[in-house]
Structures are given as C-alpha cells and as structure tokens.
Length: 145
Image 1 (cartoon, rainbow, N blue to C red):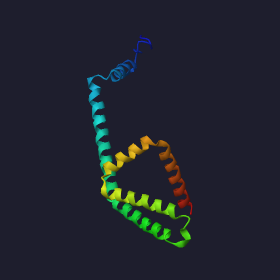
Image 2: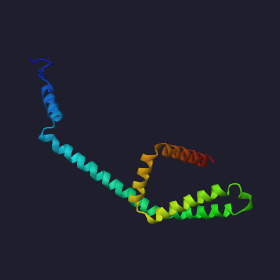
Image 3: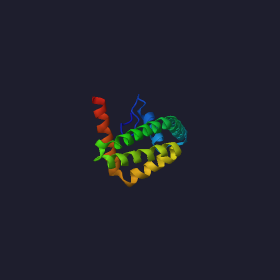
Image 4: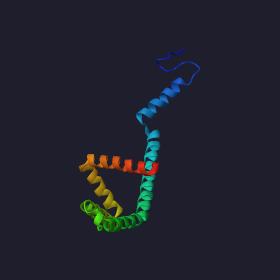
C-alpha cells in the first residue's frame, strides 16, 4: 500500500490526477496546443469586439457632431442677448470649444481621435478624472430630474 506523499493510494486515482496535474503545470506538448488555441480565440474575440465598437462610433459620430453644432448655435444666440453680458466670455469660449470638437469629429478618423484621447489622458490624468466626476455628476442630475 502506498502513502499519500508519493501519490499512490491504493484504489484511488490520486496518483494519476497528480501526474496529469504536474504535466499541465509543466505545459507539456499535449497542453500547449490547447493554451495556444485559447489565446488565438481570445485575440479573435478581442479583434471582433474592437471592430464592432469602431463601427458603432463611426456610425454615430455624425449625429454627435450635428448635436454639438446645434448647441453651439444655441450658445451663440444666448451670448448675443443683452442679459448675457457677464457670461458672454464664458459662453463664447464654450461655443468655440464645442465647434472645434464637432469639426474634429467630422474630419478625423476614429483611430486618430482615440490616439489623441489616450495621449491627453496620459499627459493629464487628474483632468481626466475630474472630467469623469463632473460628467457623472451632470448625468446623475439629469437622470434624477
């Protein structure tokens, strides 16, 4: 009769499972094919998801740019009123920022926009986090009302 330590308990498959487990741990040729196939499937799934996201972004960019242009014209009409003398500089800068953003959405590719966004986030992570907090606050207020 064997002992538990050497993995050969009589009447059990413990010794076999132990040997199979050690083969998996060593990544012998029988298991590397499975691992490689899993990695390839993960890459294909990732690529398909990325293509789908890019397609969704491409299809909605025009709508977002159009909405921004509408907001720009609204801000400009508000800033032209006499009551908005104090807020005119702020409204003008907001309109300019929205106009530049809508122009970029229309004229640049999704890859260019994504690369630029990644660069901005790396250069100013604090600003990115503050923007996310502000956007979350605004969305929360809109959802509540």
